[in-house]
Length: 139
Image (cartoon, rainbow, N blue to C red; front, top):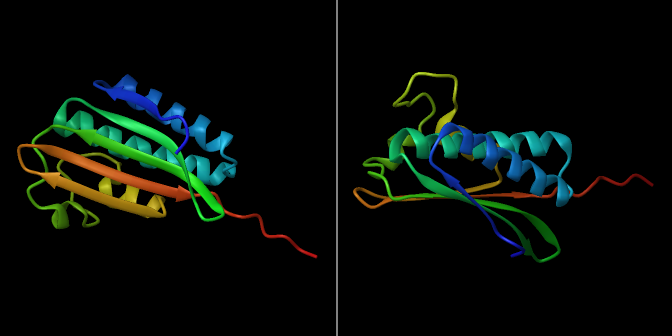
């Protein structure tokens, strides 16, 4: 793990900040433009969930290495009401709000790894990872 970046999420402006910090870190780590956009979109979704359901929380951004590969880790944490039915919340099309957001299932689809732990009355932690893709080399 590198130098963790912490963004408090209390209002919609914090979603923009978390997204920008995520983009900056992804570019620094060598992600391609399309992947940078996907990472920023996933950060937006989990940050929006914090605002909509818990009112406040935090996004933690960091780099990680495993074997010869590296990537970005995004952790979204809150101490909100929690999710009573995580399986239902992870179904495409399930939404507690109207809008174009893709929610948690979309965030999972945008990233390479996705884990969610939620306890009713205690809060929710979403951990997402995306690996820097190796460039395909032609001889």
